[in-house]
Length: 389
Image 1 (cartoon, rainbow, N blue to C red):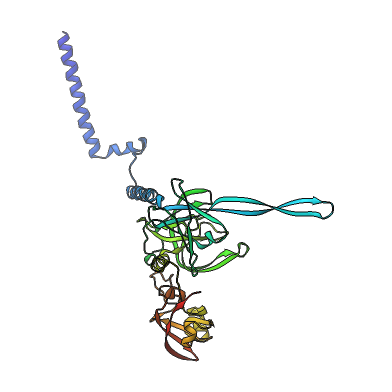
Image 2 (image 1 turned 60 degrees about the horizontal axis):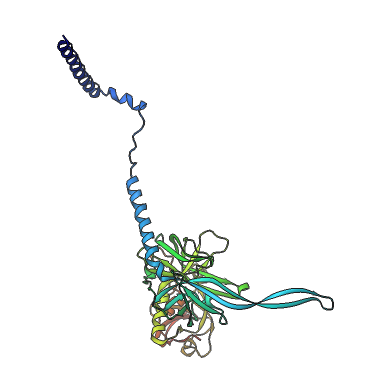
């Protein structure tokens, strides 16, 4: 009897299962099961492009992490040590206020730099502008090295510091082929306090011209053809490297725009490479000098005034190459070695060929061919470049 009931139960279950399969097949055939979707929670599936975006973000993060780890030993902090006088205010019954001073020793981090050849370190000239102070270099491991010699570039806001050490050198890239939107990383001692701070961003402009410094701080300098970036650059980052995704320095961080958000500037690394080449050959900085003070005439201004576009000569330095060749005030220099001044040299038209940019790529003693406009006539002369005093 028990066997019979077990057989009946098994047979009924088999019939039910077979019926369920048949009904399910019919329901799927006519799409009846789709009405259940609204009662079920949505499946977690990747949106179109989501996997690509996640992979791209991960790749970018790994690139930045790799740069930060590899470059860190080559980035250093510049520290200053000096004695300064601090005013003391006291009351004297005879002299009313008696102004006295006392000496105080100051030691603090003031800037950044990076190693280019063992014991040679690049930084900004304004970082080490105090000739009466002593400077030292602090590496990633907090090892300290006194600066033995400082070589300041008279033409650019650059300086080379020499220490008795052999630190890891940073590779130098090519700043002549940069693109707006290119990923960059800045490393330095932010605010003179936070060493090896890493910030990221992009190149947001090329060929900028800025006036750096402050009259209240004792220096103002015009810098041409600088790189603009939105990577956060703060006081203390000056002299540190601006790095591309390959881990090469493509600029030297030099200034920030006051009152702006994430607008910083860097000197193109190719200027540094030229300075280093000259320094290694001569042991000092020698910059070519044409001998004119000028103002660039834009294309629009040239059309309005019916003159050619170029560099309007405002003054000719006495006994310079330009003076000996016969260039005069009022001349408009239009070409140097066949290169038209003001002509775009980049696809986005942001980088233009300026007089200083072309001359700075020459060497002292080079002879250049200059085409200039005077009184409606175009003339061509040869000028031998001298040395900037």
